[in-house]
Length: 206
Image 1 (spheres, rainbow, N blue to C red):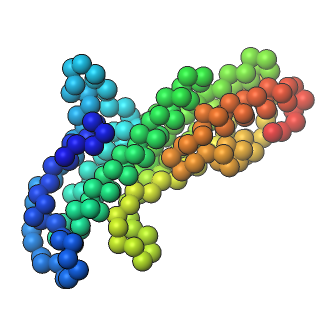
Image 2: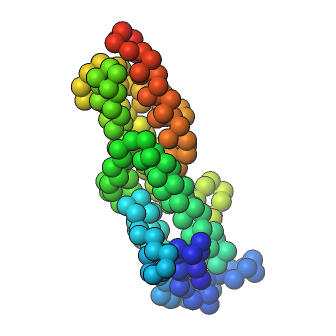
Image 3: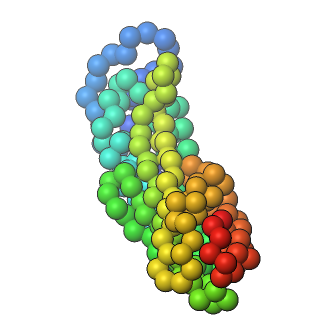
């Protein structure tokens, strides 16, 4: 099966739980794989970005840990589709963020993705680093056995040189405006930049 023309999921449906509500019959796991195929299209190649590779690796690990005979096919497909939707949401936000700022993305660990945006404020001769840390994990909600991919974002700011704006307030300003998959980050950074420039050299915090 393919999803969004970017992922190919291979699995054996007979290894997964049936829709009938009864105790699942124990069976051995069968081979399962999740591969990125968009960069294989010679006419419309789309290289695997750092952020998409991060989510893909996380999803692959979880798929290998599944107890297949206890997992419904529908839940498997939902996990893959929702997980990749989150990856695409993050990737699109970073693309927009990079239009106006220098952006660097790196995988910090199996469950943490780091994004650094650089703000240059020539009018006040200031340089600011904004760090977004996306934490991702898999699990199910209370009372719900459906496997889900969950994300959260932590934000911090650091003045490299120039006006000594309060770094904690910059982080709080952004965190209040950024969603769990980085939604709205580009607009929040633009608003923060405008506020810092408007503050000028008075040394007044955001």
